[in-house]
Image (cartoon, rainbow, N blue to C red; front, side):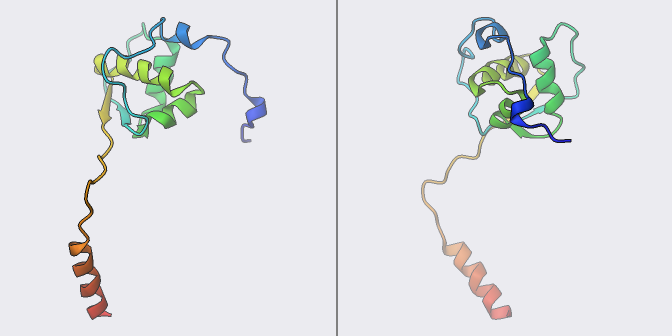
Length: 119
């Protein structure tokens, strides 16, 4: 059975309660496309339920935006919680690949011509 959006019950807990009043991460916030993954470290029993949910979902690589979608929280809230987990060594991040400033198609053309000759 799939869950419909109408079946979801919104969280009664306000985002500022979840982040303990913090609006930022204290540093540069994680980009929404940053990939995150839980480490093999044991989960401390003192974690908030939201931290635990993040670690449960992040057994493989997920983007910050995907984690937010799974939890049903705004990405800004998830960024704060992920910053906690990164600081505690429970999550590792892989920054997004920067966009190339200049696209050099010379190599691509050589590969294409090589493939065309073989066909």
